[in-house]
Image (tube, rainbow, N blue to C red; front, side, top):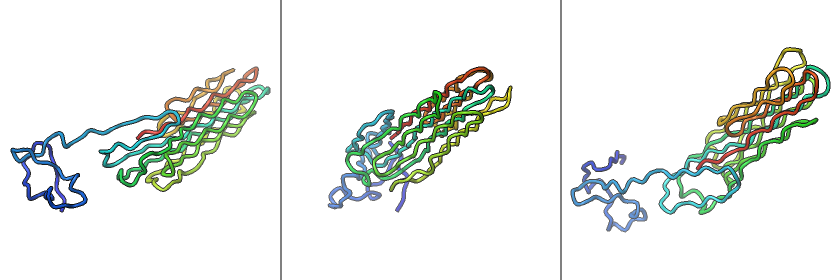
Length: 239
């Protein structure tokens, strides 16, 4: 049967499996204090870990369930070329995904990979963002870099997340195409679930800087000389 459990509220011993019943789950049976109430020490707070670099996650012994957010890195913005009023394309954002599962499903350790943001285009296209992954359970592709040139193409999304534990996947927003018209500013980097894409200013402007996690860098804007794009933002794993 199902029941709500509230700390320090009266509960009947008959509502729970006997500790002497010899069941496989007896270590998980809540303990009643002498007054017949659930002891507040039974309720443990969440453990939150944020990873911005490669690491190994070790499962705590008392863990019951796990929520994982995986954000891949964004692509870099492309540079403009030497033609006046040209602009490189914005980098795409990395894919985001979520997993919620019982801790018993997971191995005792899980390898974490955190994607590195795509490099800024310098007389070139922007670099692609790196993938982020939580073992074989979630793998999120990074966003692609924006192209160099007049009206450079924006980077495309890396697509859906894969893995055995993916509950929800949101591909990163594609980068915006650069402008080729005087006075216009485009080439915006793609937004991620956990970050905002870079927005490039007018005139001679380097690509706008991405913020947060996993967003794309803006494309460089040329009024009288070639300008570099901006780097994409790195990914993150939150457990």
